[in-house]
Length: 332
Ligand code: OGA
Ligand code: NI
Figure: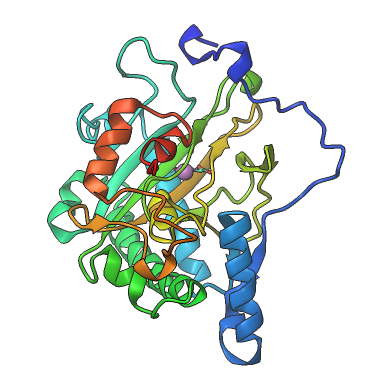
């Protein structure tokens, strides 16, 4: 394996480490339960998952299985193209947008064993379909449809989270900017990795935005979530999504919800494809903990900041797991 992917020994994933306590799993929630007599129980399960895990899988999410299949298909087809064809969409080091390859990058940094394609859907002025792959021909249309379906799911979750926090149902959506929010997709392609114990597919991080809806690979595991100091491997259910809380929801909920660190470990036998849709606040809106969740006993934990300021701040500091959340923490 080329040296620039090899991590210092103390930073490597201990994937041979056996769990003595047996496997543990992130919560699974049937969103169908939000209708009818199981509503309260379902709300409670979601609330527990947001507080204790920051991660859960959802079933009966309303996104058609057929669309999920087509999304995976166009994603695979794009990454199967020859490198030269993908490089037409290469991102500049400045904008995250477009094709990012392990194969052409800034010097010095230790690299992750993965490529990605990053694209914007919202706000509309950032959506530029000409920067999206023209091949396969169904790519643009399929991704558009997919983004709309995930948008619906995120709005539903925003309402549920607001209600669970004891806020008005529309509170979080409004705090994110109402109709004027951000939505973007990072499609991750992790090629087969010759020595997965020496590197990461994706280094440990928390997601900076609001909600992430991940469509994982249907056949290959790799995502791990930090729970009580242990890395828990996610075992994806067929056609389920993995939902996780981002830093901005940790801030708005004043730390009641957790944006949890996660990472991807490579696989020596098979490649892996995943789609991470990010549902984010408007970049210019100042976010701070909801007033209703702050009092003398629970002072605000985070200083007011816009999402754009926050992103700039993390980018300058580089990926440092969750330490950036600590550095915007107020010291009263
Ligand atoms: C991400 C992410 C996980 C995965 O893109 O932010 O955490 O399984 N992806 O690819
Ligand atoms: Ni992530």
